[in-house]
Image 1 (cartoon, rainbow, N blue to C red):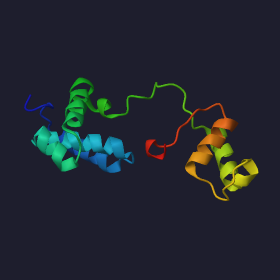
Image 2: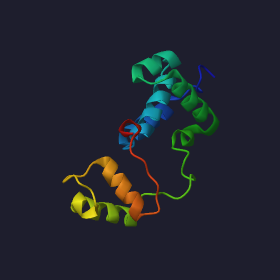
Image 3: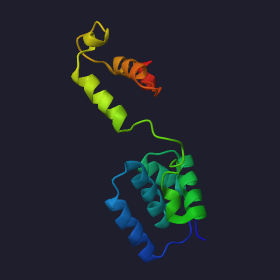
Image 4: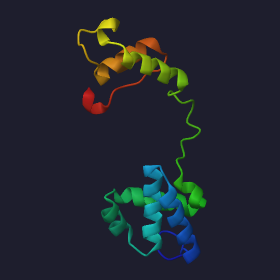
Length: 135
């Protein structure tokens, strides 16, 4: 073992590069980039600086890669419970956005995110919150 990830053969690096290029998920692509950089001999600190991420992220991704291989790069939250965003929820949201806020008791003539969240919470059983900077 040379570095914080196992020494990668050329074919393994090429496979990771190919999968990274085809990847459409930005977070997964970032994890591929971390492993590719480390596999090419870049230090964890240099990798973190080059990718503009925290060094702890580099170490966490490398540890999961060591333990689980490429499967460790994928999001580990698939068994995190049922998703809140389903077809029924989206249909309600689309219908809401097409309507006017005043039809739902708001004074403003246009929707704000906070108004949408509050109205959606009243129409569905899902509890959601606006972004932290909106509070």
